[in-house]
Picture (cartoon, rainbow over the protein chains, first blue to last red):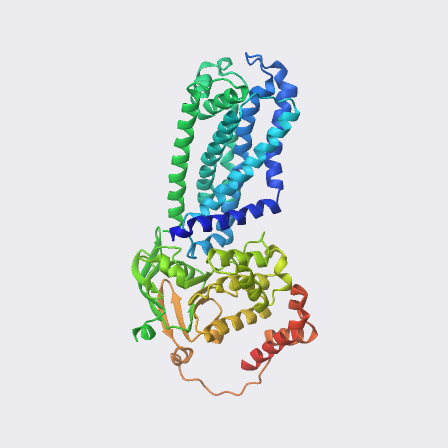
Length: 254
Length: 281
C-alpha cells in the first residue's frame, strides 16, 4: 500500500489542482483582499504610521500582507475538503485500495501550490507599488521556505476544520481569526506603540517572529534569533496540526 | 473446493450504535457468490450504516463481517481490493468531466491504460458524447450511470449499491436495473439496498428485510411470498399502472435520454430493452 502513497497523492493532487484551474477565481479572490489592504495601508494610512525606520512603508508591511494572503487562501482547503465529504467522493476514495493519507496530502499540496501563486501575484503588485529588496538569492530561498512552512502549518489546521465542520460556512470561518492575527503583531506598526498587554501579546504570538524574520531577510539584514523562534512556532504548529488532522480523520472512520 | 461454498459476504452479529441510538442490533446474513442480494428497509432502518461497515468506512461495535473471505476490521486493505462502493449520493467529481472522473478512478486503482478504460466504459454506459462535459451538468440518470461506471473499474468481485435508484426517473431506474443484472450475469456479487419493494422483486436472488436494526426475514422472493396465506385466485381487469402509461408514451414519442447524451443512435436499442422490461413484468 505504501508503495502507492506517492503516486496516489500525485493523482489526487492533480485532481484538486484541476479544480483550481477550472475556477481560477479562488486564486484571484485570495489575492484581492491583501492587495486592497496593501493599497489602503500604503496610500491612506501609511503616511501617518511611524515605523521608526527609514525604509519605505511598503517594504515594512509586505511580510504581513503575504501572511494574510496565505491565511485567507487556506480557507479554500477546508471548503474543498468539506465538499468532498458532503458529495460522497471522499467515501468513494476511502473504500478504494489507495494509500490512506493520500486524500489529505492531495489537498495539502494543492493548497501549497495555489497559495504560492497568490503570494507571487501579491508580491508582483507590491513591486509595481514600489516594493524593493536587496535580498540575496539565499535570502529569497529562506523567505520562500518560511512561507511554505507557514502555508503547511495553516493548511493542516484548515484540514482539521474541513474534516470536523458541520456546515460549509463553518468550514471556512476558522480562517477569520488567522487573517486578523497579523494586525495584532509587528506586521503594520511597531509593537512598542501598543499598550503594554497588547504589546505583550503581539510580541509573543507567532506572526511577529515570522514577520520580523521575513522583513530582515528582505532588507538583507541579519535575522538574529527571530528565525529560530519563527521556525519553532512553525514546526510546532505543523506538528500539532498534522496530529490533529489525522485524529479528526480517524474519527471519520470509526 | 471451499472457495465456491464460501459466501462472498458473511455478516455475523454486527452491532453499531451512535451514542444512544442503536442502529444495528445484531445483523446476520450470508450472500452467495455471483448473486444479487437486496437489503430492504425503510429510511433509518440501518441499511446505509451496514453498507458503510461492509465497505470499511465504519467500524462495527460488535460482531464480525467478512467480505471476499477477508475480515473487514482486520484486513480492510484486502477488502478494498475486492469491493466497490456506489454510495447513496452519486459520488462523482462535478468539476471534472465524465471521462476525467473515470480516468481518475482508473489511476487510483493503478490500472494500465486508464484512458482506454475510460473510453470503453463511456461507450458501455452511453456516455461517449457527454464524456467531455463536466459531470456537474449531467442529469440524475447520467450521473448515476457514471457513478456505477466508476465503480466497475478494476473489475471488483463484490459491488455495494446503496439505494442506486433513489431519486431517478423511471427510465433511468430501468437502465440501472439492466446494469445490475448484467453485472450479476458476469459473476459479480451485488449487495444492494433499497426502499422500493418492486426493485427488490425485479432484481434480487435473495431479499433480507432489515427492520429496527435486525434482519426480520431473509429468503428468496418465493419464500417470502409463502409467509403469507396462499394466494387467492381472483379475476381482475388488468389496468395499466401509471408507470406503464408513462413509459409507453415516452418510449414512443422520443427519447429524453437521446437529448441528454446527444446519441439518438442508441435510442432504439434502449427503447427495445424497455419494452422487454415491460413484457417481463
